[in-house]
Each structure stands twice: as C-alpha cells, then as structure tokens.
Length: 205
Image (cartoon, rainbow, N blue to C red; front, top):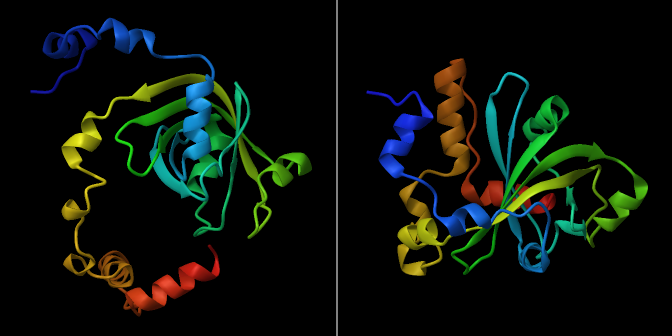
C-alpha cells in the first residue's frame, strides 16, 4: 500500500516539533555564515523543467563557497565531466537546494534558494583561488536556511574511521564504468586502473 495524501503521511508521524518548525530562517545568520566558511563540501540538489532530479557533490578548500551577504552565496564551478546537469537544471528552473557538511561534525546546514549562472568579472574574481579562476559561478539568492540534526550521521557513524569501507571491496571506478557502458551500449571499452584515474583527477583538481 502506498501513501497518497499528506493526511495519511501525518498519521504515521504527527506534527513537527515547535523547535523544528521555528528553526527555518529566511537568511544566513552568523552561525550559518560560519558553518559555510568552514565547510569544504556541499551537495547541490536541482531539477530540470520536467522534474527529473539530480544531486551533485562540490568540494574545495574550506570556505570555497563565498558568503557575500545574508542573502547571497557564490559557488565556483570547478572542472568536472562536462555533463553540466546542475548548470542546465538551474537554467531550466532557477532553483537549488544545498547541503553543507563539515568533516567531523554530525550536524549539517541546509540552504534553499533561487540560482543563476554568472560570468560577472567581480564574481569570478571573488571565487578565484591559487589554482584557477572559474569559468562561471552559481549565484544563490537565499530563501530558507536551517541546521539539520545529527541523527543521520550518528546512525551512519560517517566520520568513524573504524567504519570506513576498504577500497578493495569495490572494483575501481574505471572497471565499474567499463562494465556499465558495456551492459548498456553493448560495446567494449578499456578500464582505467584506480591509480591511472587518480592521476588524471589530480591534473584538473
């Protein structure tokens, strides 16, 4: 049996607590700004015009996402695989959800807002680092901000080294891609070793 209404859903969970309802802010307070300034990692959630969803990880030095003011963030776009899923989705809908993480912290920060793609020189310069000036930046107009509780990370023990999976338990990325492409396209492709792939990654970090 599948749930089809909000009423049915609430029958399972009840109302949100007062604290959970009140914690959403319309702008970045000092705590949210500090969290972003310390964060080296954020996941960008977006959707295209037909509602197909995507979530894309972005990383950099701590504070690589720039807080311009209480309503504005700049996210530099670093070299990737050129699929441009997130960027095309922003062109379609102009909406973005962000999940900021801090290594060692079980709490996360969620930010939702309107997004545009900017090549404004001042914005590009604000996001430049020792490696490069980005080709473009994602400018986010903040609409909702809230801290997310630690329960998921506590359950996962995400930062506990004793719970980290050993790399040998999975094939290399190159081997997995080889198998997946061959299964879908029916054509044989070569497989990079993990060492070869990491060396290629380092060239465009």
